Image 1 (spheres, each protein chain N blue to C red):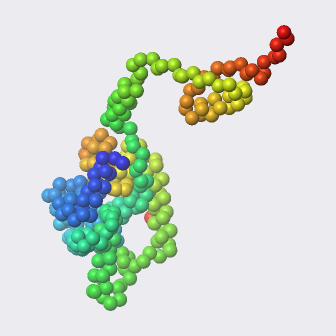
Image 2 (cartoon, each protein chain N blue to C red; image 1 turned 90 degrees about the vertical axis):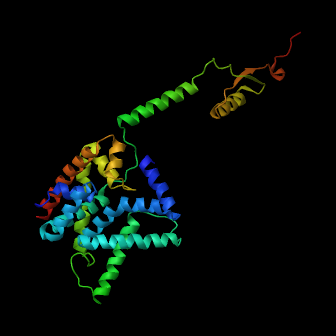
Image 3 (cartoon, one colour; image 1 turned 180 degrees about the vertical axis):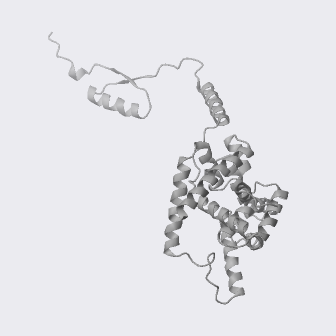
Length: 180
Length: 131
C-alpha cells in the first residue's frame, strides 16, 4: 500500500475509535466528494452542502455509539447523505414527484450510463501513462487528494490540475458528441 | 463574476480552488441556472470517472521511486555479499547402490542441500578372489 493509502487506513482506524480530530480531518478530506455525488444526483449546491453536513454529523454519532466495525469513506457518507435526501423528500411530499434526479433510472438510462462508463474507460486507456495514473489515484480506492497525487507521482499540484482539466475536457467533448 | 470556465468547475470538484475563488464560484452558481447545470454535469463526469477509473494497485516508477529501489537493492546486495569464500559442502558417504544414491541426491538437491557422495566398494559385489 502507498504512503497515502496507509495514512488513510490508519486515520480510518483512529476515527473509528471516536478520535474527533482525525474525524474532522477525514470530513474535510471527503466533503467535496460527497457534495459532488449529491450534485450529480440532481441536488442543488446549497442542498448538497446541507445534506453533507447532516450526514457527517449522523455518521460521527453512530461511530461514537460503536455501530460500525469499519469505515469506507467517502462511500459511507455519500450513502448516508442520499438516505437523508430521500427522507427529506418524503417529509416534503407524501408522494415524491418523479423528476430527473430522484426517479429510479429507466433501463435505457442504465444502458446509456454503462455505455458512458465504457467510453470514459476507453478514453482513459488512450491518455499518457502519467495522466492515466493521476485519474487512477484521484478516483481510486481510497481516493487521493490532488496534493497526494502530486507527491506520489513527483509532479506539482499545478501540473496535476492541468492534467485533469485537459483530460476532463476531452471526456466532456466525447460525451457531448455521443449525446448529440 | 463572469461565467466560470469548465477548468474552474473541474478544479472546484477536486477542491483545488482557493477558498475565496471557491466562494465566488459558488455564489455565482447559486444565481445562474446555466452554470448550476454545468456544475451538475461536472459532478456527473466525476461520478462517471469514479466508476470508470481502474483501481490503482501497481506502483508507478517515478524517478524518486526508482532511486529508492536502486538504493534498497544496493543495500541488500552489500548485506548478502560474501566476505569469505563459502566453505566446501560437507561430504556425505553412502554405500547404497548407484540408482538409490542418485535419486536420494536429487531429492536432497531439490530441498536445497548440496550433497556429494563417494561410492564405497560393496563387498557383496566384489568379484571372487581367484586365489
